[in-house]
Amino acid sequence: MVEWKKIEDATPPEKKLLMVTGPSGYSTHGKFLSLAYIDEEFRPSRGGPLRWQTVTSDSLSDDGFYPTHWALPIELPEAE
Image (cartoon, rainbow, N blue to C red; front, side, top):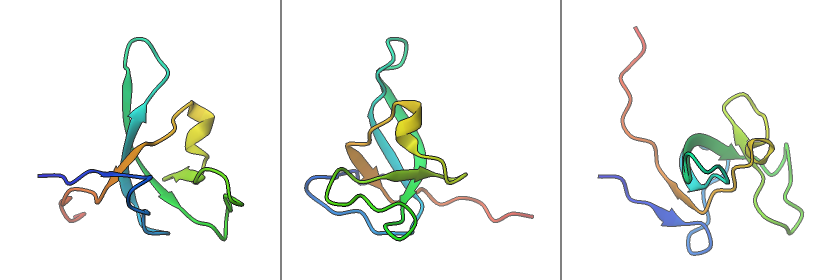
């Protein structure tokens, strides 16, 4: 079972790929689920909201996604 943590209650670890979710801002899908990470050296938040990066190092907020919760990713199979 996935243990979701509110970002305001538990600071996510930096430079670790995490599952994130929150409101999407789209009417067809009210929530989003994505893999993302924080890297304060690459894109510092400078005292504002955390700046989440996608797996391609794009800003998650560029897609209109602002995470409210994070969790460690599920176990994925090894690449062959």
